[in-house]
Figure 1 (cartoon, rainbow, N blue to C red):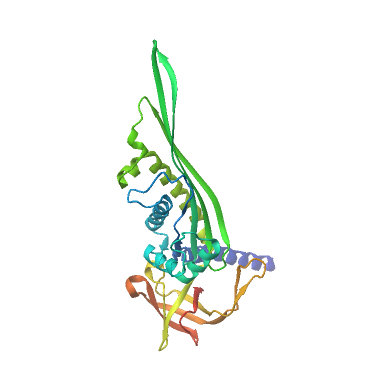
Figure 2 (cartoon, one colour):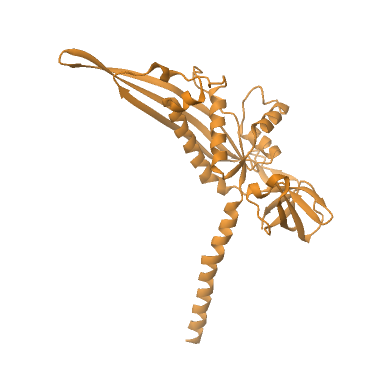
Length: 309
C-alpha cells in the first residue's frame, strides 16, 4: 500500500508539471515572432492586367501578402527596400527570378527564418451569356467570374529546405441582366478592392497567410549577437519581436557549415555553445534590439547565434 501511495504521489507530480509548466513554456515560445521575407512573385499570367500604379501582378500580390502578414501582428516582416537593395547587389533585382536556393541565401543574409516565394499563374475575368425568353422577349442572363491562382513556396533559410508548397486558387462570380464593364479594369486601390478579381485575390492571400501560420511554428526562432562588450551582450531582437525582460537565451558560435553533397542543402553547422544570457532591456532601438547580461560562459562575439533556452 505504501509503495502504491508513493506511486500515486509521483503521478500527481507528473500531471502537475504537464498541466502547468508545459503550457507556460509553450506560450513563451509562441510569443517570439519569426522574421519573414516575401519575394516578388513571378507573373506567369497573360499579363493583360497591371496594378493601378503600374506594377506587375506578381509585385502587387506580393505586396498584398506583405501587408496581410504585418497586419496579423504575428511576424517581423522585412521591409521591401532592404530586400530590393540586397537583390540588386546579388544581380537578382533585374531578372526577378528567385529560386529556393537563392531565397535561402538572401534570407540568411537578411537574418530571416522564413522566405516566401512563388508565382501568380491566373489573374483575370471570364464571362458568359445564357439565352432565354420571357413571354416572347429574348433575354440574355450574363455571368462574370474572376479567378486568381498562386503557386507559393515556404523556404527555411537555415537549411534551404522547402517546408511547404501549395497551389492556391480562388474564384468570385456574380450574375445579372447587366454586368458593369468597369469590373474588367481598376485604376485605384478602391476600384481593385471592390472588383471581383480584387476579392478573389484577397481570398487567395488569406489562404497563403493560413499556410504560413501552419508551418512557421516548425521553424526554429533565432536571433544574432550585435555587440558583446564589458560583460553585456546586445542582440538584434527586442520587444517588437516578442522578447521579454528576464527571458533567457542560449548563445552558440557558428562553425563550418555542413552541406549535403547530394542535395546541396545545408545540414547545419558545427556549432559551439558559448553560454547563456538574460534580457535586461528589450526596448533598445525602439524595441528592435535587447541588452542582455551574461549568466554563464565567455567569448561572446558579433554574429553568434541566439536561440531559446
